[in-house]
Length: 149
Image 1 (cartoon, rainbow, N blue to C red):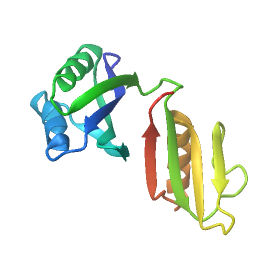
Image 2: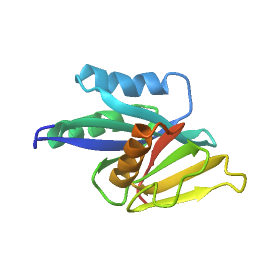
Image 3: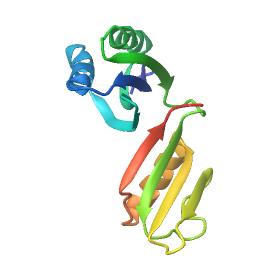
Image 4: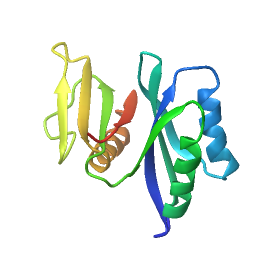
């Protein structure tokens, strides 16, 4: 990724109705931007939040935000750089983790039965922990990015 291209997260609050996801993905597709991930966060009372990860210049990212905001299904868009420390990530792993396994800057919680572990931290810290765990044969079952508070 060049210095002009950055990694972004767009947190998009949309009305929960047919075609909303297609409308959003069309905005990215029409501008030649593919996304690294697309996830649905909370959906409640007819409104959902989608998290879209993508790489683009700041100018293109702003164009995407303005275009998304004009869609009839979109309530609001929050654009955040991926390296913003306010953006948190979580990863869910089957089983427990050994002490020190998650790594620096990552909190880990295991259920009492040891069937599931949740990792939490900055995007960079969780991604680093997930990469180490994958290399050791322990891939997560889910990774999600949470909007800044």
